[in-house]
Amino acid sequence: MSRISMFNSPLLLGFDQIERVLDQVSKTKAEGYPPYNIEQIGENHLRITVAVAGFAEDDLSVTTEDNQLIIRGKHQEDDSNRIYIHRGIASRQFQRSFVLAEGIEVVGAHLDNGLLHVDLNRPVPEPVVREIAINSAKKKAVSSRTIDMTVDAQEGSDTVEDKSRKA
Image 1 (tube, rainbow, N blue to C red):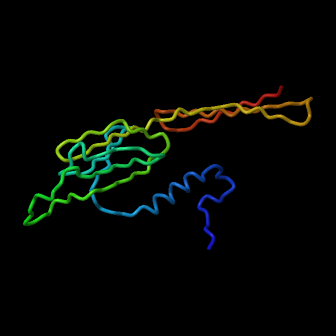
Image 2: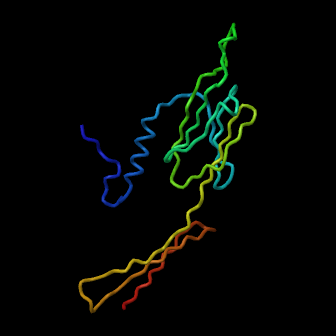
Image 3: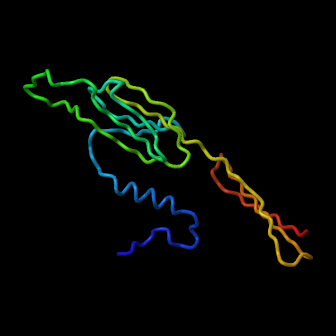
């Protein structure tokens, strides 16, 4: 069975990486342990909070692999000497993965009252305008055209200025 690409338009060049990320996210299993929150704590700052009650700092690891943030928990101590009458606190090992967008940076992580906080920064990319020279087979007439795009940060509107010139 052939797969139909979501990004098969000839106007969408170079979006195959996004399609791979979407495939990766759709294949991850939706397990509910441990529970987590994702909150925006600033204009460009996010925080993932994972409930890790019963896990010590040495039992947890936070890593990034490619474009994924992976949080793992595994108990180091041996519970073989304990006799439980009721065991309602989950102590099983876990792995929770989050796919990160390009450019998102993991700032740090800290453990506080059974909650693991992982802080992320999403830097605002600066718009880059680059002039591309247009070469023709005729050496007599070489023309170039520049289109400057600026973003007004106050209003969020785009301004396009067309500067045409002939050499």
